[in-house]
Amino acid sequence: MKPDVQYQSDIYARVTNKILADLESGNLTWRKPWNSEHMAGQVMRPLRWNNIPYTGINTLVLWGTAAEKGYALPYWMTFKQAIDLKANVRKGEKGEQVVYADKIVRDEETPEGDINSRQIPFLKTYTVFNASQIEGLPEYYYRVPETVIAADAPQRMETLEAFFAQTKADIYTGTKAYYHPVTDRIQMPPLESFEKATDYYAVLAHELTHWTKHPTRLNRDMGRKHYGDEGYAKEELVAELGACFLGADLGFEPMPEAQHAAYIQSWLKVLKDDKRFIFSAASHAQKAVEYIHALPVP
Image (cartoon, rainbow, N blue to C red; front, side):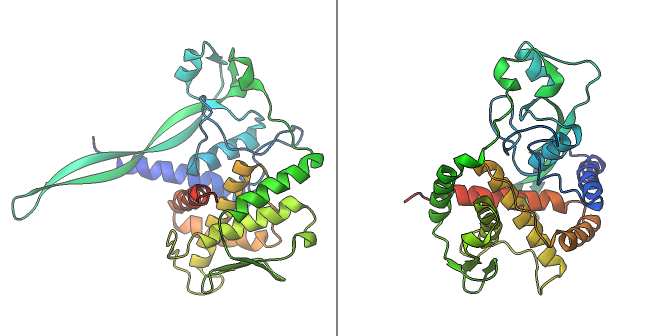
């Protein structure tokens, strides 16, 4: 099977154009994906019917759709999966397309007459529906995740402290939040300087995503040469998404950034110039988060 180049281009363009439209309106749908204005719910990743979370670009796509449509339920499934659960998608409901990577193997003959097999990756799409669009599912699919109450914070902070401590990242206290690649250290303002403790951990998640780019870890190089250039914008988008993914996994809200207006303008330029980059950024962010989660617990 040969991947359709035009079809591949359309997938990248469709997803990127949707995110571009959100950015142009100043709306980062990946930052508040867990509830609409009048619905309560805990931040989390979108889930498949079997409770396995979506990852990478699919997380962004489904978060954006949930925010746009006001879906408070985290579950998504195909038409057939709903039928298998003895449920049905309501008439007239429209699903959202998600993607998955596939490969074809092509045999090529070398000048010496040998046959080399080459794997060629490509994307496919399929349509999923939110549980809010489906009738007759088992009751637990309709449970809205409980809102985290501030009174729960002390226990949650202990959990987050333990999580970030196990990374063994070199974190020291200073006046600004940034990762220094030369010294391989993260500077963080004191926790007391933040309005909420979770804001501190949200910023730390952003810097920790930068920390994964070090050559001894994921060796991620987005081509940054100086502050504010295209490579800088790309790495900042990776860190932004990484912090949001970690927030979803650990249950805290990403902190609003004072510099978002400037970031949005730089991201708009990058995404307009390269329709595939949001896929790449989401993939890099996903790898960073998986790397952090996989670090050994002492």
